[in-house]
Amino acid sequence: MKRRAFMTLLSGAAVAWPLAARAQQAAMPVIGFLSGASPDGFTERLRAFRQGLKETGYIEGENVAIEYRWAENQLDRLPGLAADLVRRRVAVIAALAGNIPPVAAKAATTTIPIVFGVSEDPVRLGLVSSLARPGGNATGINFLSLELTAKRLEFLRELVPRAVRVAVLVNPANAGNANATVRDVEAAASAMGLQIQILQVSTSGEIHAAFDRLARERPDALFIGGDAFFTVRRVQLATLTARHGLPASSASRDFVEVGGLMSYGSNLTDAFRQIGVYAGRVLKGEKPADLPVEQSTKFELVINLPTAKALGLEVPDKLLARADEVIE
Image (cartoon, rainbow, N blue to C red; front, side, top):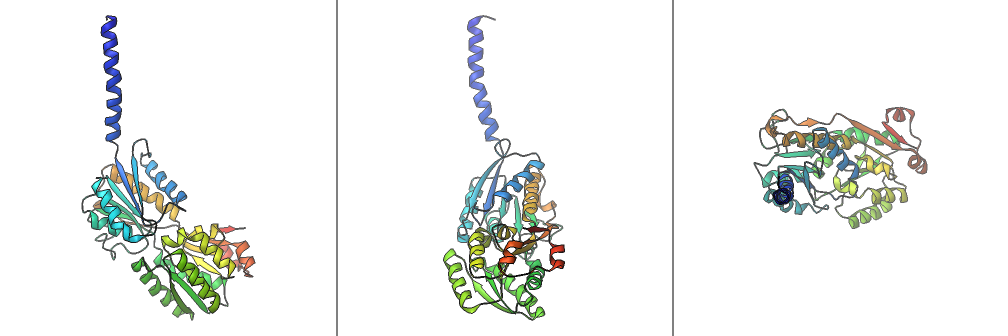
């Protein structure tokens, strides 16, 4: 081959390679990640979500892209964020951190597949026709957080046997979750002979105001509703419960890891991994209508012993034996 022809061939190849790379990049599927919370505090869960994707052959930045949309606890933004993902024609929407994101996604599209993570019955939320046969464009994982309300209150009572009056924090911005929490905790408290005081908070300032009220009224314990907003505000909640000497229980282990007393709930890290797996399976061509809704099977009781000691509480041996993790 003559030198001039060879150089022309090389020049053509140099142009073709970037074009091929751009074509490959353009063909990369995109996942729309829709969350009612903020990135703060979700590092481990995001890692678990990506691990689930990896288990199905997808690695972010290599063969799949993720468009993140965080509502930053301003839940009224979710419909707009969901609509934006629809306009971008993502391949699948992963809707997490509260029951409202998947409802917003479902309202925004009936064609783009949705993989959700919810704490309430997805049939009651209108996301699927049934757990076994979702029947539409959505499927996912049910954390069962609300179903565990009675058991969590029972564990709190066991750790604080003198408790008679229990304050309950709920987030009115997430009305469906808040109403279900109040309903279930009141039923459980009635069976245990406990008095319940409901406090509604949806901002950092309202949390401080609620604790000012608690300082005056001195309930025996605090039950923190299972809500993504409270996970984001976990440091504030742990600090205030310690400052006021108030035994508190959360649905999220994140609260205990930053100094809170105890938590009982679904293993959300594993649940986020499962959501990643389902998102990967959908990308491979499986239809949400054919993927049954999975329910969490891993639940964890976590207790912070230094916090219990600081509160003057002795953790019963029976409760320690049941704990999945004890922070010492």
